[in-house]
Length: 123
Image 1 (spheres, helix red, strand yellow):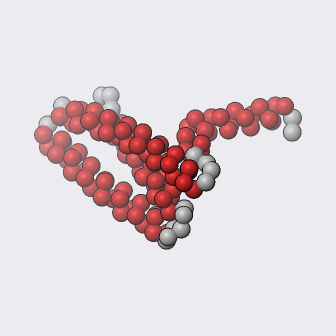
Image 2 (cartoon, helix red, strand yellow):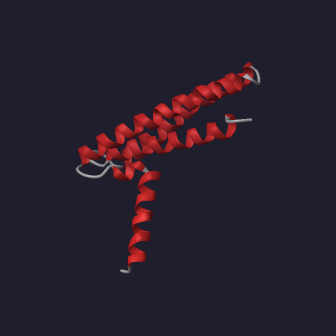
Image 3 (cartoon, rainbow, N blue to C red):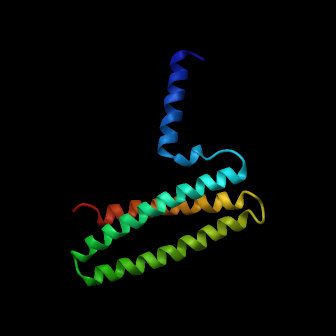
């Protein structure tokens, strides 16, 4: 492998790790699970912050928009829970179930954050 190829590989690896911190969650199943749970807590806190911003933005329109956003959030939570429960069920009682469930929650939560930002972000 040439030096250039090695450097490109290193840059790609570091960039991927920065974009996807869950890639750092490796090791025994317990360690991976604990790392992913900590990451989910961070992503969930970001969602809560973004949701509060979205509520303020929605209030600039009228109460109907706020009610629709609140209803959407309740339904999104139910959909996320059902989808991630299905993901967990695929693993049965296997040790990969908890990390799979947590990754599902992280993925859905990131998607929701992106959606809130695109709809209720800066106008």
